[in-house]
Image 1: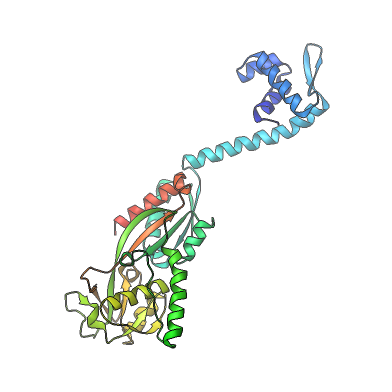
Image 2 (image 1 turned 90 degrees about the vertical axis):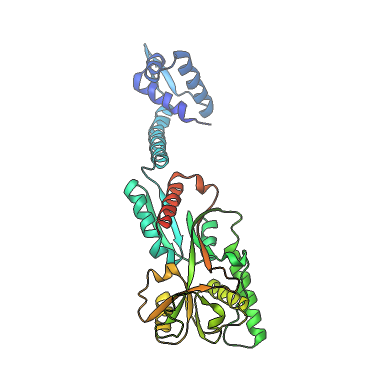
Length: 332
C-alpha cells in the first residue's frame, strides 16, 4: 500500500538527488529516508531509484510514480486546506429545510447573523413541512430541519375528521393521516434545539362580536362558528383542542396558505386559530386577533425547534447555524 509520506520522500529524493539531501530537506535522518524508500519499493515491487556516480536518479518506474505523486500530494494538500477552512469556519455549507412560517421569520435574521460573522459559510434553504422535512434530514438532504409540534398532544397526533364524507370514511382518513403525521413528531434520534413557544391566536372577522373584547376567548365560545383550518398537523391539533372544549369544529375550508386563511376570515367565511409567527408575515387586513384559551385554561402554543443528526451537530458550521437561529428566536 502506497502511503502519502512515502510519496513525499520520493519527491524529495528526485528533487535533491540523494537520500542525505532529502533527509535535510524533510528534517529527518538519512537512514529514515532509506527505510521509507525501501518500503515504497516493496509496495510497488520494483526499484524506483538507480545510483549514478555520486548521486541517484529515478528509474522509469520511479518517474511514472513521481508524475502521479505530484498530483496526489497536491490534492491532499488542497483537501487538508479545505478541511482546515471548514473547521475554522472560513468555509463550509449548511443546508436548511424549514416550514414556511419559520422561513419568513426566523431563518432570515439567523442566516444574516451567520453571514455577518462568517461570510465564507454558504447557507441554502428549501421549504418543507414535517414529516417531509424530517425525512429529508434523515436522508442526508439537509443538515438542519426547522419543525414544530404541539406539546398538548405529548407527541400524539389528533384524529382530524374532514368536513365531508361518511363517519366511517372520515375515521379511516383521519387514522391514515395520524399515522403519516406521527413520524413528524418522533425526534428521539435527533438533536433538538428549542427555539421558541409560538402562541396560537384566534383570527376573527373584524366585525365579529368577540373581536376587541380585550380578554382571551374561550374555544367553547366559538363552537357554533364555521372554521378555516391549516396544514394537516395544525388541523389535527385544532380538532383535538375543540374536542377538549366539548365540540367538533365544522371545517369548511382547509389551506396551508396563511394569506388565504386571513382572506377567508376577512370575508366573513369563518374563524381560524393561527400561530402568532404566521401573522407576523401576513397583512391582517379585515381581521381581529385575540388570545385563545383552551378548556384547561392553558394558553395554546406550538413548540418550534431546529433539528439535526447527532454527528452533524459536531460540524462547526452546523453548530454555529443552530446558535444563530436560537439567537434570532430569542429576540422575537
